[in-house]
Amino acid sequence: MPTLRIVVFVMLCTIASGPAGPQSRPARGGAVEVKLRKVSAEQFFAQEADGFPPAQNLARGGLVKASSTHAEMEDPLTVLGGVRRRDVWAFNDDHGILELAWPKPVEARYILLFNRPEDFGDHWQAATLHVNGKRVATIDLFRTGQVLIVDLGEIVPVRNVALNIKGVARPGLVGLELHKRATTTNR
Image (tube, rainbow, N blue to C red; front, side, top):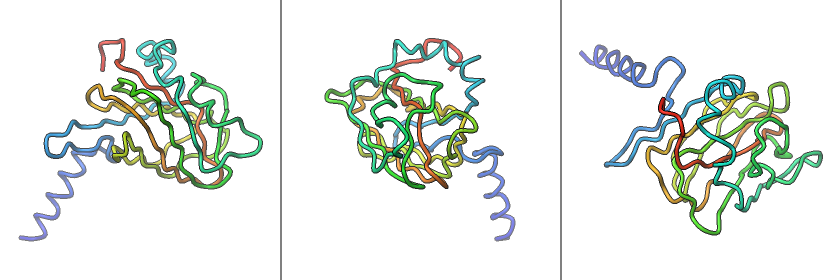
């Protein structure tokens, strides 16, 4: 019954990933599972922001390098400045690589990505997230006006983060934050 096996496999994959597609990367060989959660900026500020106070953002003090920057946008370093609501940075092209590094490793469990404000710029069509040179997540459509909460599953010393982003025209980022822990208990 090869057909039945295929149907069961597809059903199990659908159950595991949910209707919106995979939201986490399965753990392999004892590795900790990385979980991704996309929320609207409105939902983040109403229900999530208290759990990630800006004062506890550990990403400040890092270095940033982008493969390109649109002439009308600010320096890519601004994505580490704690901005959560203002359109600050974008690629000059439809794709690119954003690399962030810290002189000393930063102990973090959560990475917050604040996409550009709704109706500003381009959605991300796809992206990969690398932490310390290791690919930890594949990100599907990440719309403007959304926040991506990445739970690394445990506190890790973060030396660098790289985002390989593909859009249609000049995808960008408002901010990237690193947090050691969420301060609310609903995580």
